[in-house]
Length: 492
Image (tube, rainbow, N blue to C red):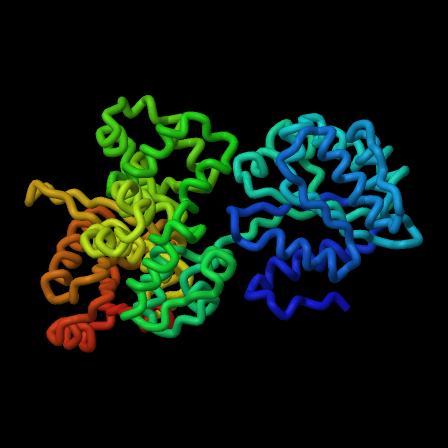
C-alpha cells in the first residue's frame, strides 16, 4: 500500500501518476520528468513518493561539478547506510552507482534528482550519460530504477525531451504540476466568501507556497481584513512576498537582459497586451521584442492568447498574479514601499490601479476559466471547444468592441460555431446597457458566421451584481445568462 500524505491538498491526479510510475514492476530502468512553475509543491510530491516507497531523494544546489559530486556521493552513502561517503571523480561513475541502487532482488526503487537543471548547468554532459544508462547496455548492467528528474526552469525542462535532445523518447512519465485554479485556491486558503477569495486570488493566484510558508498561514478573516492582510504580507518589506516577483525573474537563468524583461512585464501589467502596445510603452521597435517575448513565454511568466476572431492577432498576459500585482502597483511605488511606515499610504492611493489593472483583468480571466471548465452544456448551449477573448469591428459605428470571452463549439457537420459571448465587470453592476452592447456584438458576429452561429448565448459576469431590469430579462430568456460570484465559485 502506497499511503498518501494526510497533509497533501488535492493533487489526486499527480499522486496517482507518481504511484503508478513508482510501482511499475518491469525489470528495466525507467525515466520520468516532473516540471512546473516554482512554489507549486513539486518537491513535496516527490519527497512524499520517495518516503512512501523507500526511495532515494537528492536535492541539487547551485554548485560546481566537484561540489555536486561530493554532495551526491554523501547522499548515496547515507541512503545505503555506509559510514564513509563515495568519492566520485565524475558523473559517469555517479550515474553508474545510482543505476545500481536497485536490483532484481530489491525490486523497483524510486530515485529523484530534484533541481536537475542545477546539475546540468555545471555538468552539461549529464543528460547524455543518463541516455546511455537508460539504453540497452545500461539496462543490462543496472536495476529497475524509477528515475525522476525534476526542475522549475520551464524552458530547460521543456527542451529536455524535445527535438534532438539526448533523452528524447526515453521518458515513461512527463508530469506537469500546475497552479491550483481559482476554485481550488479558495479551498486551499479556507476562504468561503467568493468576493474575498477572488481578491486574494488576484494577488497570489493558486501557488500553494504563498498560502503556507510565505504568509505563515495568515489568511484574511473577512473583506474588512483584506487591506490589512495586504499590508501585513505583500507590502511588508519583512515578508518574502514583498520581493517574490523580483526573485522569480532572477531565478530564471535564460533571462539575461533583465531590464528589458522587467520592462515587458511592466508594459503588460499596465494594460498593453499587443506587441505594438508593449513596444510603444517601452519606446522600442516591435521587432526588437521578439526574443524577449518568446523567452518570457517559454519560462511560463507570460502567455500568448490568440484573438478569438482574428487568427493573426494575439494578446500577451502575465501568467502569475503576483507578477501583475508587483509590476502594476508595487514597482511604480518601490522607493516609498521600501521606507518603513509608507505602505498604508501607497495602498490607499493605489486603489484605482488595483481595481483596473489587477482585479479587473484577473476577474475576466477567471470568467474565461469558468466558461472553459465549469459552465454546463445547458448554460453555453452546446459542447465548448475553446474559450478566448477578442475584438469585433463595427464598421457602421466606425469602432470596435472588446469581447471579454467568446465560447466556440462544433456543429454536427464539423464546422466551428459560436456558442456564446460574454462581458465581465468586476466593480460595476451590470444592466440593460451592457446587454444591449452584447446584442450588438452578436448581431455583427451573426453576419460573419451566418447560419453557423444562431442565437449565441449572452453571458453577463459581474462582481457587483445585476440590475432588477436585467434580472427580469434573464428570467424570461434562457439565452441570457447572469453569472455572479456565487455561481463562479459554486455553480455551472
